Image 1 (spheres, helix red, strand yellow):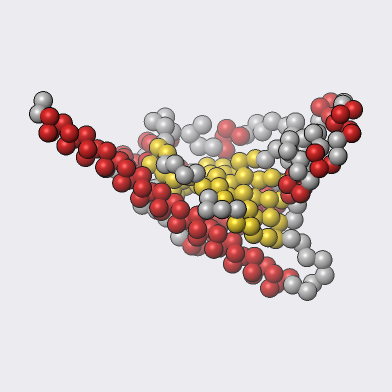
Image 2 (spheres, one colour; image 1 turned 30 degrees about the vertical axis):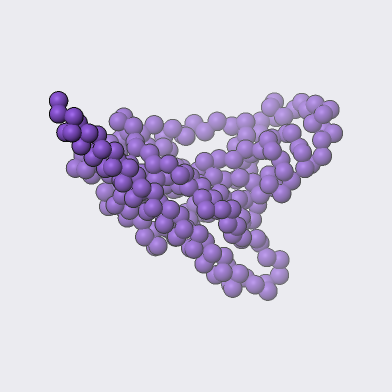
Length: 232
């Protein structure tokens, strides 16, 4: 085989894939920055509405760096975290069977923004054993189309990928849905049998270093977890 042709194919493939991933990275980062801007707007709107009305329920924004945002409200914290790598869906994922992807396979490459829910007290009291939950993850491709895998209140069916474009309006709706889901995702007491024993060490530990883990569904198994994530 001609060495020049071989190199041409190799270098062309290298550039094509790298440029595609760089483009998706930039668009995902731009979307993430838009999330930050929208959250700051929401905080300002909340404070304007409730400032001076007695005890203010906290609704706070914290910029934790270029790829991480913390949104605290009531007794909850949402952490939005952008992954710096670009991913492709598994061939077995339902999204790969859509016409949208079959028409252009490059559309299957996506940036990812993960959304985690923690108890605010877990951070306040430095309870390192407490549990957080991934409530959703947002996939964004080169066309700025997106879909969400997550709990039913957040998740979008994969076949919406072809028509759902990430805009300021859709991003705000996504953030609002995440907050609403979290508000309704209540802390449940764990089964008695799982917490009836505690060691002396655990009991003597201060609340700041508490070793007895707390989580909204600690000790419970989500029967519908796999149903809530398409393609699983």
